[in-house]
Image 1 (spheres, rainbow, N blue to C red):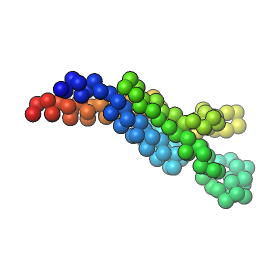
Image 2 (spheres, rainbow, N blue to C red):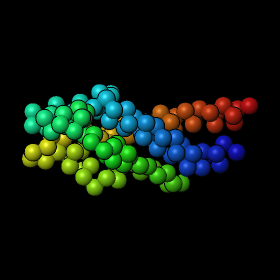
Image 3 (tube, rainbow, N blue to C red):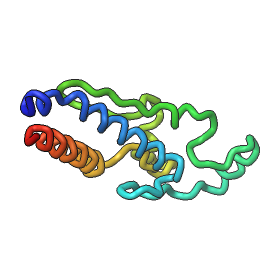
Image 4 (cartoon, one colour):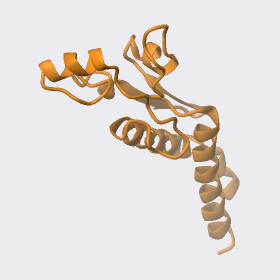
Amino acid sequence: KAARQFSHKQTPHKQIGIAVYGLSLRAFDSQGRVVGWSRWAALSESTKKQKTAIGKTTPLVRTGTLRGGFDWEATQDNVTFGNTVEYSKFHQDGTARVPARQLLPTRDTFLGVAVKIYEARARKISGEANQ
């Protein structure tokens, strides 16, 4: 039974997707002030003026589209995570005029989440098998 439970990977993959999604939203809302994220660069003076004119002050938020673009998918074999908004890559990686503002977890952060979830799953299955 324990081997069968552990081989059904979609459940932990869903947990990983949910955890990384939540972590990404916290990082977005705190402007990168989450462990494993790079703190976002301050807005330029010209961008501050533009945002103030439309009643906004938060970096990367005008309509909510970018924040709402985080998405994940879990299958039996893997979990993928990203942002579906086409221009998100320019904020993630930066350009000549726009500083990089990390939206997505680093590979190490993503793997750290996965390891914690799989370790917890292994402990649970091991405990059930010993009963």
